[in-house]
Length: 371
Length: 265
Image (cartoon, rainbow over all chains, first blue to last red):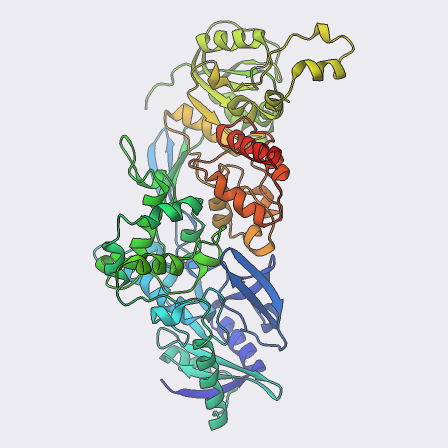
């Protein structure tokens, strides 16, 4: 896909305006509680302009940039799944009165969502969740209702985070497909511009509605340089080519007990993971016995309830729960869905309260094998 | 339509406690009329004058056992009750008053009371489950009104209450909170603490105090090691685990481990 246009800061604002004019709810990165989270945005001033982050295992800090970049940071604690696969979702409620029982399905929202600043790893995560929720015999209607008609504005990362390893997973940092428009931000002493690639007809129409011009050869070189620089600056790496077999032949490895010494089984890694999709359902009833409802909630394979069957939890030990999560992510996801379940975004490393690092765990198991 | 059976009889009992959990029942302002409509509140000193008579279908028990008299009284309550639910940290873990378990009651009594010989008390504060069988334990200091309504609703419907034993972290993530430990370096007991409060403190940029006591499978040594790295020293760790749920086994054990190591230098 070739770069087709250049827009200015005003052009990015015009893009937000254009999307809103076309009925989209515009969602993107913004500053809150000393982090970059996803929320509703209306103007480029809502973006974390001039901010960046510093990330390591169990550690995240905001820092001021030396420039005014709109997208000069890596991914934060949120992922787009909070919009497409909400953490809490009432599925239906039922009313009981003298006339009998009436079940009322919860209507899905109808607003069109535009995601601004989607990174390449996140586009891969969307594709993975698409496979989980939209393919096969059982399509999830709630995910579909939210996913259909999304407008994706990708951003090619201008900076690698301290826990990023998309290069290892083949998921970035340059967005190759799955977007409507993709921006590469060029910011230096003399200019602040965005090289735009078009990824869809909807993207082309939208570009037509905002002021833009053709890129100069110099701007195209600068955009390429941004991606090349990010590629070379990954905070983490993981040898991923044979990890599927590596983990499956080490299911009884001592490292699982080692990581269990550190793991808090808090579930944070699964909640921040952009591909983790497990849920449970919770029923409630009111005091009068007239109304009940069923709510779907994000669940985590790190809880005891997750593997509870008659008689107890199948995965009582922490090592068995960590192993379940990591082998699913890196091994059995291939068997189940045909791809890895990990996109190398690094969230599980940064947001683990005790900094457990999936890349380090893989390396430890790999290095223990005879060469 | 099934004919309504007689309304279940509810009793609310107080042992050694501050009354805060009982008052949570009165705080259920929106649901109070529905509760009064669905159950017969037969014994509730905070709300009505009444006496112990007959049997109770549901007993909510607040407070810990700190006197021989109360140790006998809880057995009487148990004998008269079909479903016994403890409410709050005192009833489920011994409460803040379980700090006496590490101290001398005589020493305290001699300082606090003009006539310590009038004081008749046990050397320990213990949870209800140490004395009688408990059907369900509702956590919290104080309990959440939302969870109390859930427990009563579940009792009335004959189902299990939904009060997941996972970490407070799950509640933070469901709410979209930014982790204050990761992003701010604020020490937080969320990863080892039982959910239920709705992550109130982290939502206001404060570390979790562990009011709901230990979650299922808490990894205390790992939690302590990380908190130590964030600047909490050994005496600080001991104090952190010795609050409202000081007597809960994982918190007690961990606080003692740090106290021992502190003394050993």
